[in-house]
Length: 450
Image 1 (cartoon, rainbow, N blue to C red):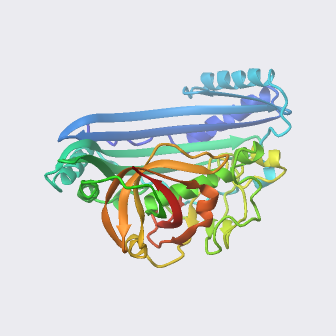
Image 2: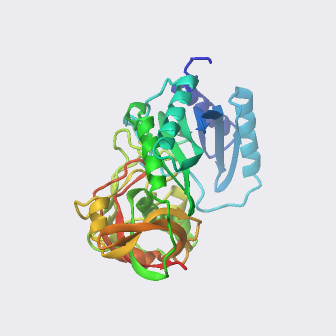
Image 3: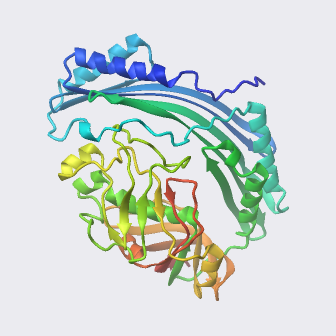
């Protein structure tokens, strides 16, 4: 196979900045009172191995241009995958045409000029991986084989996958801001199936990082996936019960994600959230602290600016259990009579402070009788009411120890009550995503079984 670095982006940032500026100049020439444009170039390689063979080998190379123009309070947007100057002019023309026929929106427009970022700090977000297809295949095969070697009861596989991605995004607007930065992401995952006389069970494991050398070894990812799968064999149902529920870090961050979703400006101005007008009110126990830290070197959620060019900054979302702020873009902020929080495009590294020095094993030992969640299924979360009901599998805890695996249950509650019922947040922080959180123990939920 060709051994070149197939994931190397073949355009530089300066070229993309020139394209953005050309789009802004064209919008101004056509009479737009404000304009913004973003150009991106992305490449990636993905390999999946299943049952010892290569199942997929995919390479992608994508480019895109998006332009938004404003004529007063009328807005038009258009996009193109063609970055030629002719296509750029046509894209601006389409955006202008759309804007002329749209209704005025008093909240439309760019983020305030005073909030634009200055010189962008280097956050160490780009670490290309010159992995060849052959090398990627070898790692995926090694990962899957390690999982299958864990136990003879592992009889099938959903495969092991290696993915690597590199991209550059440049954004600019008519305030005079033009800037961007390159970034990378790399991941390795594996999922296998084990079976015995009582049936089949599946589980997985993965690792991800911006730095390829920081990824867990393929054999280690596979081994953990295999061990997690085997320990779920001989699972049983339980009678419906109300008991403590323990979420491990990789699932606990989803609870924080539901909190963030309720804080988003769109949910607030549409009045479609159980956390309506929550700022200044007690949401969690007083030991809960959640902060946003956008400038952590190399972190998954780090960014020097948001998608509107607004400088990102450190801030508190929760202190002493009290909600301290929303998650706003410039548009949603105007709808609420507030100022953008620099979160157009999402949050940037939410850190949930541990409330104890215990990891998952120690937290299990603190539970007399309860449920450890291993997997969640379905989308049974009502963002308006906070009602929470999801299919689950995991393990029953008795006297501080794992008693047996459990499947085919539903865990249910209400997020507002669940947040108030957090008993502890562990020190076993998962750093693989935008939310960094340890295990979370909730005092009581309904576990619906047979």
